[in-house]
Length: 307
Ligand SMILES: Cc1cc2nc3c(=O)[nH]c(=O)nc-3n(C[C@H](O)[C@H](O)[C@H](O)COP(=O)(O)OP(=O)(O)OC[C@H]3O[C@@H](n4cnc5c(N)ncnc54)[C@H](O)[C@@H]3O)c2cc1C
Image 1 (cartoon, rainbow, N blue to C red):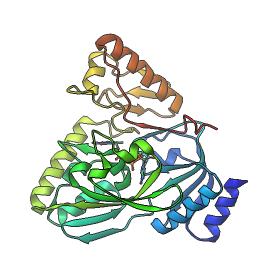
Image 2 (image 1 turned 60 degrees about the horizontal axis):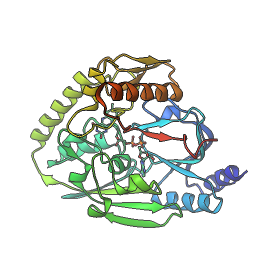
Image 3 (image 1 turned 90 degrees about the vertical axis):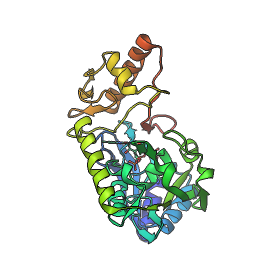
Image 4 (image 1 turned 45 degrees about the horizontal axis):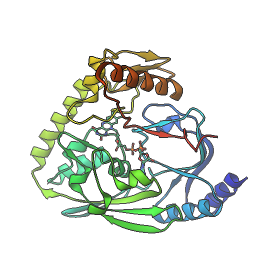
């Protein structure tokens, strides 16, 4: 009943696309997951603020989704409202600053920045996330990460109130930020500060990075990038390989033969298959090397969210 009321509100006020019982597998790169009770793609941050305010009044739990490239959605789906940022996709250029709304594709922004002769975002050319998801996760590669280029971010809290965070306040660390820990705010835009560079050199770097990814990653099968965080001074992939878990399979979820820190969906993998496989890999690595691997992927709809 509450969900229907929120649905009507979003439709009547024309705040964005909204759907009831929307399957989420189509919004995750793993192609796994049940439905969101209510799913909304707000048109802009103001619309998003109004949706949040209304959800708060109705006491509907809210979950945020970017491009779903680092999440495992439960087979039972997600209770309440899922807000996906994809439609918030404006970019404002005020060099050396670039402000991108949360739903801008990071890889595309990286290409555009490079073409304009600005440097700093080359590392992101093959990361299939949104700008907001990348900022909250402090996504990174090839010795750089979002923490090197983010100047500030704007957020909305669960009542729809806007706030700004400086880079220092975001407390970036390896694949995390203060906002990832609290999960109570949605990033609506990110301001980057970039340096003057050379478009040709940026292109050369990006071509090199994309080639490296092509060679290393199982990009032909649905996946969510690295499943486990790298422990200090050793890569999770190497530990998994040494524990001889490469190729292990539960249902249609398989530890990639190509890159041991990736789990691929061979066809119809369920979230429960992935979870079982994650646990088996954790146990095996612990038994062999006494190191407990922590997950990097975010679980959605599993804990208190479960229907
Ligand atoms: C093939 C492949 C390669 C990858 N390579 C890399 C890599 O090199 N380096 C790397 O760091 N990652 C990598 N990843 C993982 C992933 O792309 C990044 O973590 C990315 O930044 C996640 O962005 P997203 O929009 O997909 O976030 P999602 O997966 O949608 O969400 C991730 C988390 O962020 C939250 N979230 C998303 N958007 C917002 C928002 N606007 N406000 C608040 N919370 C939000 C979600 O609630 C969730 O908790 C890779 C993934 C794949 C599939």
